[in-house]
Image (tube, rainbow, N blue to C red; front, side):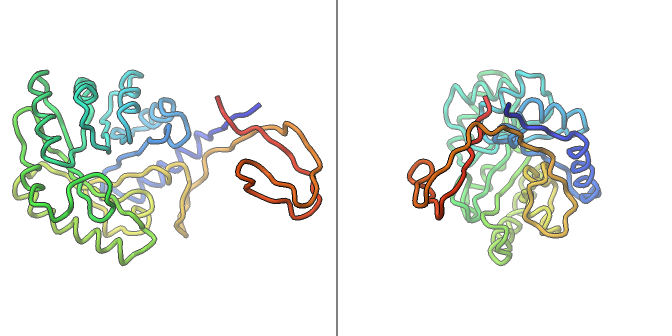
Length: 273
C-alpha cells in the first residue's frame, strides 16, 4: 500500500507561524502549484481556504480552472502568461487573475473581456533577471501596460528571484523591481506589489511588499536556518521484493548506480495513482 499521510495540525501550525511572522506587514498569497505541492490540489486548497487563506496562485490554466470547478471561490492568480484565445476565454469566464508580460497579450485580454462583457483583473510580470515570463525591467512598455483600461484592471505587479541564496544577485533584482514602484504608482495607484517567494520571504524581510507568495515553506520544505516550520507529510510504502546482487551490478535506468560490493537490495513502490 502506497500513501501520503498529511498532518493537518502541522499544516495549521505552519500557517499560523507564517501569519505571525508577517505580523500584518504584508498580505499572504499561497502558491498551490505542482498539484498543491504534492498534497492534492483541490483538497489542499480547500483546507487552506477553510483556515482563512483567501488568495491563491497557480502555475497553469488547468489548475486554475480545476479549482473553480471544485468550488474554490477565493482569488486565484495564474502566474504564467497565456496567449491562446480559447484558454484566455475560459480563464476570464472563471474570474481568474491573469498575468501580463507584453502589450499584445494585454490587448488580446481586453478584446476577449469586452466581447464577454466581463471585468478582468491582471498582474504585470516584470523580468528582473530570470529570463522567463514578463517585461524586461527596463522596457518602456511597462508604464503603458499598467494603465487601467475598459474591462481590464491592473491590480498587481510582481517579479521572481532566480537564486535567493545569492544575496548580492537578489539585491540587484530587488533594486531593479523597487525602482519601478514609484513610476508605476504614479500611473496606477491601485497596483500592489510582490516579489518574495518562500526562501526570500524567510530570508529578506526588507523585501516584503504588499504581498508575499509562499509555497514550499507552507509544507515545511525549507533551506533557511533558524526557522520553526514543520514537515507536514510522510510517504509510506512497502517493500515489493528483496534480492542479492553482486559487486559491479548496475541499478536502474541509464545504469544510474553501480553496486560497489555484494549487496542485498530492496525494491519499493513509489508511484501513486
